[in-house]
Length: 167
Image (tube, rainbow, N blue to C red; front, side, top):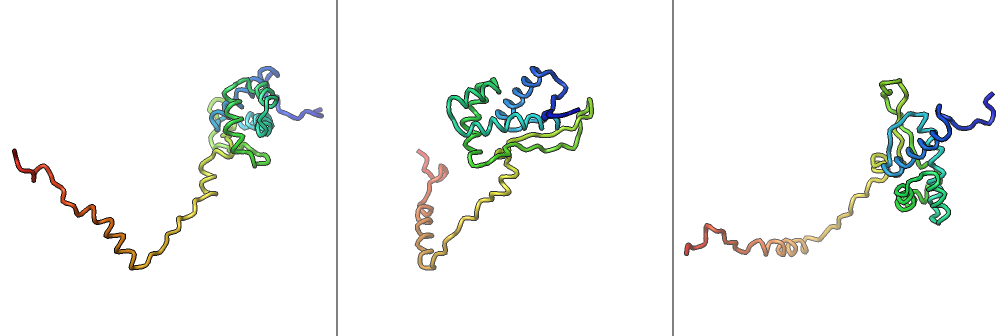
C-alpha cells in the first residue's frame, strides 16, 4: 500500500535524489530557467519553493538552512539578494512548469521547461505594458518661438574644406 508516501522517489537512492535536487535547484536559481522531465520538475517545485519563501526574511539562520539544502554559496547569494526582492509580495507559486511538445529521444520522457515566474519577460511584458506618455498641447503663439530657437544654430554658416582658400 502507498500510505503516507507523499513525494516521488524518482527511482534513486536518497543521497542521489538529494544531490540531484540540490543541483537542479541551484541551476534554477542561477539561470532562472531549466529544461528537465516533468516528474523531476514537480519534485523540484516541492524542494525549491520553501527555500524561496525562507529567503524573504534575510537572516543568518535562514541563510544557513538554505545553504544546507543547496550547497552552493553563489546560489544562496543570488536567492537572498535578487530573487527575494522580486518575490517579496508574492504569497507563493514562485515557479512555473511549461510542458514542451517534444519528448526526449532516448526514452520518450515528457519534457518541460521550469522557470521562475517573475523572470519571464514574455508574460510580464504583456501584463505590464507601459502607459503611453502624455503630450501637452501648445498654443500657436509659443510654437514659432520654439522653432526659431531650434533653427537659430542651424542657420550659422558652416565652412567645408572645399570652400576654404588654399594657402
